Image (cartoon, rainbow, N blue to C red; front, side, top):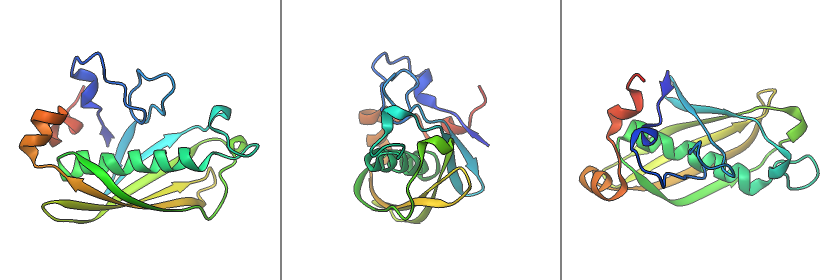
Length: 160
């Protein structure tokens, strides 16, 4: 199921998120879907994100995983949160020349103030190339809506 980006409808000219805004020409421009209990995205690495020759930079991998995990918080926890910690592992290099990668993230635990989300970055052949365990501080819904322009959880699943 497609996850809609409700921030596109906000009318804010300054929506420029590095991870998900299509308006940020230097950003990742991720689009998300819900597959069972996992938020997923597909992304095509480019040379501008290279670390060593033909290897996707580890910082870019971390940003991809952090953004995907944050969309679990927004769409499934139905609030916004900030990453308070992220534990990442890189078991296999991501070669840019191999093409599209897949990102997957799922909620593992939640209470009133914290969400724990695990993410995986899969190479084009489905091999796990990076994993992340993220911990998010969750804002109360009223604060999320008034201070962070959070549109509510249902907005991520509206048609059109």
